[in-house]
Length: 241
Ligand code: 16G
Image (cartoon, rainbow, N blue to C red):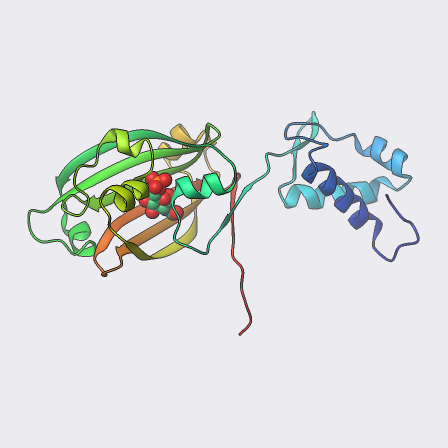
């Protein structure tokens, strides 16, 4: 597996080899990696080279070190394509994961000025405020807060929100979701993220904000989600025109 005559650097070969072992699930999340000494003996390469390969894999998120205990395989990240206006339920199903929801908050109230403007609502109009913890195979992935006008999405209930909001909007209300603008930025976990997402203080999250519009241009939802940065990564295919 390690070819000393190859022009590829030895650390790189070892790195690729360990990566393949993880990707083919011969090594699973939580498994410990053999020690530097063991790796250097079994591949007949220096410990410096082994260390370099491991450090690179730690930096790329494949492995993590625990002081005094060793090096372990991390939970691999879910990869999410940024093309396409999809729902969380669709994203999880596309990856053969079981989507789950925990409804944390459901309220109907008159929109405040800022939300009214962003959703293009008149005086006294009511909105839903929905907070859901979104899970994949029962693991918390994202904490999501959404605002939607009641008049556009009548009849929304906690039961519906335990399933898919977009399915209700499209299949029950027969509305056509058109487009959205979305931003992704880095943030540090807040108290709520720590509580619901099972993450430690000080860790980063991916903060995603989406404004969605119906095909006829009417604003449908404002959404703010914190995604666990240790479990999620976004992928985008780009083309040089
Ligand atoms: C995604 C969307 C959110 C939408 C939800 C509907 C992002 C950042 N957000 O979470 O805007 O409301 O899907 O999901 O992608 P559902 O149909 O599974 O309830």
